[in-house]
Image (cartoon, rainbow over all chains, first blue to last red; front, side, top):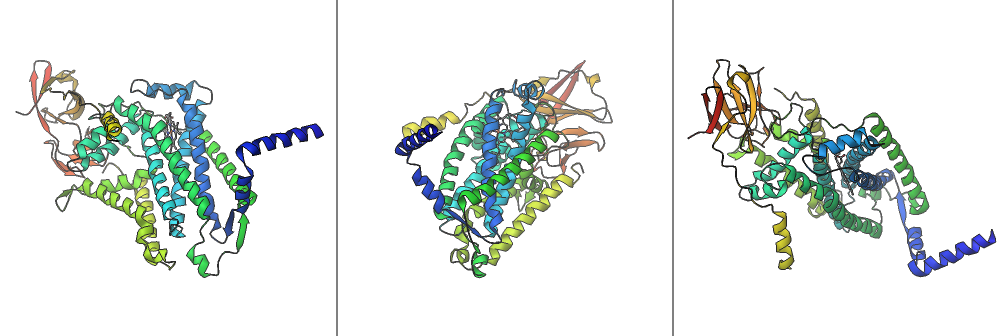
Length: 365
Length: 124
Ligand code: HEM
Ligand code: FES
């Protein structure tokens, strides 16, 4: 027994000499989390991180069988689902965790907005967060095409065609996005490279920055809590907060496993570039509000093509989202900024209503 | 810098594919294989086209790529005209938009029946 203890101590000293982890320990001990009625929102970022780790793990597993070509992609996913032991489970988890990850990301983003945690000096943290949102949506959009089924094919046709609505540069954007004029096997290999290499790399860099900044600035206390006399106290990050995080992660894992087991990912029909778009055509749910908006826009608004107006509208909204910390001057001075709260609530209501309509409005009349 | 960025950027832009110059196609099915009040998708070079037989027996052909965001349209026997499922665009049997977001009508083609062959060509 004593022998083992000496060995362990030696090993620890050896590592300490080389890595110097006691610095890390001090850092972990210093970090704490304010406790107040909005503390619950601090868990959403960590939850999103956990789901991203699940995506990396299951994504790597999928790579063992997936083949990125128009001839083989659909068949390789079919094989994975039908023949490979637990193949259906790995794919279902990848597809469910992608959805849950975007969902928690949205919650994280809107909670940060509503508790005004984007105020300087956390504006850079906010910018990196908006970048991560863009990357996550790009993950979802490129991944959706990979099984090369009918729904994915048309979702990609429409989604990439949108880059073509811009005057002058549109055609160029379109051919870069598709790897040619039409959605073909060339688009698939392009999306594949982006999905499994470009996006994971970019995400790791921006995520690293995001986490570093979160660590550096600590958790912000919402102005509304400050006005009521500040936080009730703090809880140490390690181990108290981290353990609570872990409980959340385990819960998420359980939900994920249940969803994957009871509602496995579907595959549908293989894409056919010469078949009409099927009647139930729809994008992933997080693009639904934009998709539904495009349906309601008339063909021309003030002489400009309807979809161009719609796309520009969303581009402006995206830019607004990115620039919130700069635009919200009152918030930056620590004053309450009711206007921003209402704009944000308005945006949430808009997204909810159009998403609801997207799933319930009769698509054929 | 430029010596690295230019080749890398150029690499990502796909090479131009030779535009399929097909001005005329002979369809892979015979006139009696398309019934009245039915539509069929065909290949016009690398692009989709749609052939419709009206209730009167007349054949008409259009580009099947929706002018909105490029989905492939279909003929709807229940409403008797062409429909795009993507954003609910409706076109009449002259290719004109009757409802929905498409900004302009479908390109129309000329249909000729020669014996048991259907020949479709771009309008002169
Ligand atoms: C390093 C990370 C990742 C790798 C290596 C990876 C790899 C793959 C592969 C090979 C496929 C095709 C197999 C299939 O269709 O089931 C796929 C599909 C997909 N991926 Fe990923 N992925 C990663 C991360 C992500 C992330 C972060 C998201 C979402 C935010 C995501 C969303 C999707 C989606 C929606 C599909 C389509 C699922 C389906 O319907 O089959 N992936 N991924
Ligand atoms: S693509 Fe046809 S209506 Fe939008």
